[in-house]
Image (cartoon, rainbow over all chains, first blue to last red; front, side):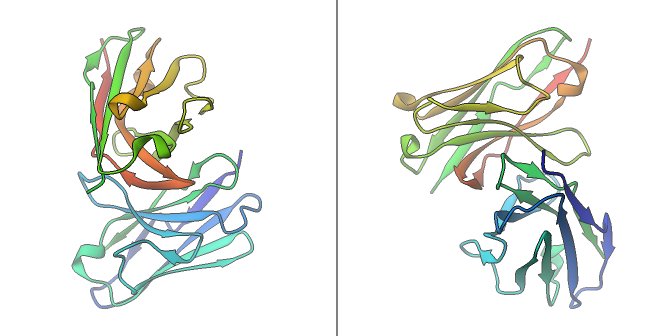
Length: 105
Length: 116
């Protein structure tokens, strides 16, 4: 089983600032990596797939990156609606989520 | 608009059974594989099951193998999850999700509580 480890668990950021979230895979997943945003009481929303391709309607301030088994989600110019929990998902071998990173004010 | 609506979640006793449903609309249902994903209260997301477009291939997480069965009825644009031998640790919000290799569209979920 591929284990996905996200860091940090919680990230405190000021509105207008930027946030960099990390996700590490226990083995190669190529670029078969997606990022989701989940707000309280809502279903997850797809942000990024293929490690760096934004889903339809996702603003350009969300950027996905990859280096080997390390993946990043960078959110720039944080807006109030961006404060949420973010999950990575590997779909290279079955499907495994990271434990999530909470982005808070 | 692509829409997924789950139903069937209730409070059930340990050892009991339950069938969840997911009604799909806004896309050609039988063109796509589907998933079930769950989220225990205050916890993260856990993939639990996959079914191919025609129902010919099904996969399960170890945590539910042998107890849960995924199925679909393409004539009714519906996805199902038959859950048996339920345990308290199965308590969660259960989401159905459309597959595009990853999950691209999610329903709002249905809550299953396993408690005596």
